[in-house]
Each structure stands twice: as C-alpha cells, then as structure tokens.
Length: 418
Image (cartoon, rainbow, N blue to C red; front, side, top):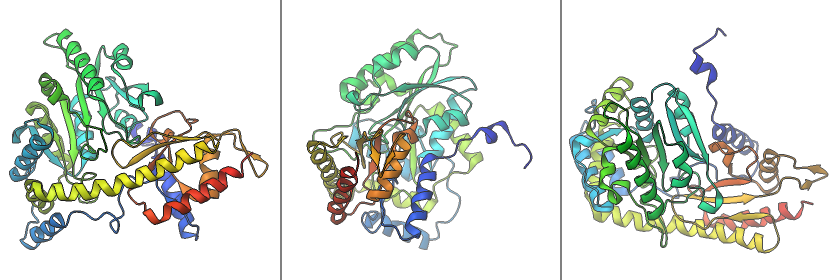
C-alpha cells in the first residue's frame, strides 16, 4: 500500500478492541467466557428507560427524520440546562450547550478547538483515550501516573509541576477505567491551581482549559458524592468544558445523545467543527431525550433501580476478591465508589502455571482468560505501564447468577499457580 498521512501511519489501534476481538473469537469457538471487558450494557439485563424508548419510536413515527440544528434542538438544550441545574446545582443557558452523537465527537471537537500542534495536554494514566485524542490533535502529552493510594486519581500536587504552558487539563470523575472519584477537597485544589495559573497569564495568552468528563456522574454509591468544578468555584465556568450524555447514565450507549457545556465562544467553535463532521445526534433521539430529561420522576425512578442493580454487582465482585485475598491469593480490589467499573489487582507475574512462568502481565491476562474464562481489561490499555498488575472489571453485561461460578473458576486457576 502506498504511504499515507503521518497521522494515519502513526495511529495506534485500540488495545481494548484487540482484546475484544480475541474474546469474541473464543466465544465463537465454543469457549465459556465471562466477558467483563466492555464498557457497555447488555440490553436484556439493563434496557434503556421505557419512557425514552417509547419517545424515540413516537418521534420517528411522527416523521422526525430531518437534519437537526447544528447545536442540537432547543428543547433538548433547555432540558439539559434544567437537568444539570436540578442534579448538580450549576446553571447553564442553551447557548452554552452543544449536542452531538455521544461524548466522543464532543471530546474530539474540544481538543481541536483548544489544542494547537505541540500544545501540552495534561492527563492522568490510567484514563480513557486521552492519549489517543492528544495524538490525533498533534498535542504534546504530559502524563501523570496516578497511584493506587489516591484511588488512581490525579492530585493538584502532581499536576502543579506541569501546569505552566499547558493548554488543556483532562479530568474524568467518576473515572473510566477505575470507577473512582475526585473528592470535594481534591477537586477544589485542582480548581484553585487552574484559576491561579490563568490569572498569571497575560491577556494575549491562551488560557488553560479543563475537559471535565462526567459521563458517569449520576452513578455514585454509598457515601460517594460527585462534585462539579463550577459548583465549587464559579469562576471555573470560563475555563471548564463538561462532557456528559445519556450513554452511561441511562444505559443508552447506542442511542448516541451527548452534550458539552461550557463558555459560549468555545461552544460556538465546537459547533462549527461538528457542522463539518456531521456528528449530530438524530433528531428523533434528541426529542425523546428532551422529553425524558424533563420528567424528573421518570429519571429518578430509573436511576434508583439502575444504580441498585449495578451496585449489588460491584460489591459482590469486590467481596469475592476480598475473600480471595484473605485466603492468601495475590489479588486486591478498590471498594466500589461509582460508575460501572471495579478496579482489581492480579499480582501474579512470576508465578508458574503448568511448568511455564507467567513472565509478563500479558501472560497473566491470558492465563486468567484461558483457565478461569474471565475477560477483564488491563490498565495498560488505558495508558498505564504495560506491566501494571491492575485491571478494569465492567459489570454492564454481568448476570448475578453467574458470579459464584466466576469466583469458583478464578480460585481454581489461582490455586493451580506455584
């Protein structure tokens, strides 16, 4: 094949997709695999809200099949404003909202709006796709290796040495892949750091903006609370672009309705970019989402059931790992906080299986997949070190009745190691 663009030649394929393809091949070949890799939902277990589904069907039957407005229909932008005000206490106006087909095009257009070639982009690893979006926009990555003692979340102290000259700081809370969150105090310190840095920059200098990904903000458990930068520090509204949507909050990953909230001038440029890309959410889905979000009773009813079902799975898996740890196995886990993910540790590198040493973390991953039938995603797929022993478990496709078998097979695989 002839040589392509430098970007195309340098693209790195998704490690998660690669792992997913292998798992699907194994399943097709008749293997019993418990696939907890995908950050999605099995509709048979977690269907979208009935009112949302009915609204989509009704909108299509009413002939809503035209192009939507470039920034999204007004009814949805107004509904998003009220939804965020009601659940987070932060007020935006319709002109500060941009609708698109999920979070990905919004994140891409935000990067393209803010980041010039060579600009510094700060983000923690592990985290979802910040490395790829930085590469796609020719930014200079500034990666902070987040630590388990901080629940794999970045701290202001870790960010501070890198903040000079940075164009974009990427934060995600609740975080994919870890299912952990930024505390109020931790986020306040980061906000104060950003505000101080922007005050130090001249009028003609580009400001430091924050990409605040809160796709999972409705899915917190127990005493865990979600905090928004603008709620904590109102001055942050000038520098914060929030990415949100219905994908994870309402098990609607394939419905493709997302929104960004931020300064009107930034939203206008993102709108212009998206108008060329054409990554609009279909108008029928927009209308149905607007109607659904406006009905807080339906929203609350769905979230109550949804969160309960997710949380019970996360805690059962966590307690299963705790039991294995107490029995002397080299595993660990972080207690559930939020989202649909659990962070677990399989510190098995160097052990021997069937006379063969598991000399890499990849070998550990393959051993657990082959011997326990358990498919989970290593943190290196999210930018962490390739030999990191930490993994993401997603419960969006998890059936409660299968978990006893999962842990029985996992313990058998661990007992077989020497």
